[in-house]
Image 1 (cartoon, rainbow, N blue to C red):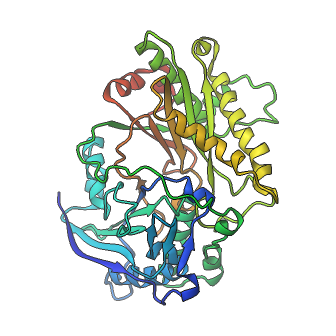
Image 2: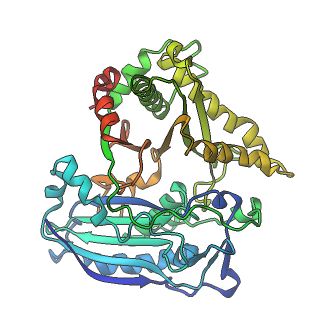
Image 3: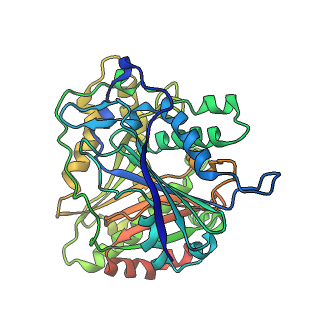
Length: 441
C-alpha cells in the first residue's frame, strides 16, 4: 500500500490580507498553548458523479474553496513570530499537498489497528511537532485520493492560535464553500470572529513555551481505541447511585473519563509500592461558560484546564461515583469563580493563570501520576460535508505521548471512541481491567 505525494505548494488567500490586519496579536489564552500542531484526518467515500458520469475534479475544487476560506481565516496563512508573540499575516500561505494511493479507502479502513495506526502519519502534510519556528506553516493540509474515488483530508493546525472549536469553524467554512450550491446563511455561521486578543490581551511576555522535538519518529508508545457504545454508557449510568439525578446528570464524556481514571488509578496502585497522588487534566471549552455564551465561530484559543486530584491512600475508599464527583467538582470551579473572572471588567490574570500553573507544575512531577484528557466530542467537524456527505471515519494522527487520552464521538454519534496512549505494560493491564472489559469493545 503506497501513498504518493504529487504536488506540494503554499496556498494563499484569494484576496490579499489588508495592511491593517498584518500583525495579528495572540491572546492571553493563546500564550498558554504549546507550539505543536493538532492533527485531524477526515475520510470520505467517493464523491457523487456528475450528469456526465465523470468524477468532479476534487483537487481543483478543494483548492479554489480553500483560498476563499483562507481569506476569512487570514492568520492561518501567516507565520508565528515567537519573539514578539504575534502572527505576521503577510499571506505566506498554508502548506497544501496533493497525494494519490494505489489502494481503496475500504482497504485502509479494513486494516488491523496496528497497520492502520502506523499509516496515519502518511495522511498528514507534516509532523505534529513541526511547529513554532518562523518558517513553519500555521496550517498544513494534505488531500489524498484513493483509487476508488474516496478522499482523505488531513489537517494540522497550530495549537498556538487554534483550538478545536476554531478548527471546526474553519473546516465547516471550507466544506460549505466547496459545495456546488453554497448556502450563504450557512456560510455566515462559519465566518470567524477574532476578538479574544482584545478581550483577553496577551501579558506582553516573551513566548517561553517549550521547544518540542521536531520529530516524533522513533518514539514508542502503545495506542488503543476503546469504544464505548451508547447502550454501554447507559448501563454504566444506571449503576450509579446519584443522590439527585435531576440536578446532576453526568455526560457521556464524564462517565468515560471517570471509568478510565478509576482503572488507571488501580493500575498505578498495583505497580507501585508507594502510593502517589493521581491527577487528571481535562481541557475545557470556555465559550459556553461565560454569560452571554460566545458563538462557536469565535476563533482563537478560548480554553482552560480543569484539574482533578486524588491523594495517596484516598483511592481505597473511592468508587466510580466518587471519581465522577471529583471530576464534576473541578468542572464546577471553571463554571463558577473562573467564569466570573472571565466576565469581570477588571480581570485578575493571576486567577486565570492558576489552572495552567497547576498543570505545568505537575505534568513532569515524578511524585504524581498525571493524565491528560481532551475531548473532541460534539464538535461540528463530525458532520462536515464537502458535498460528499459526512465522513465515514475520522482520526487524529500519531501522538508521541503517554498517559494521554483523546475522546472522539463514534460513527453513530452517541458513543465515544477513547484513543488511549500508554506504555505497553500499562496498556496490557488496562485491557484486562474488569470495568473496561465490561463496557468497552
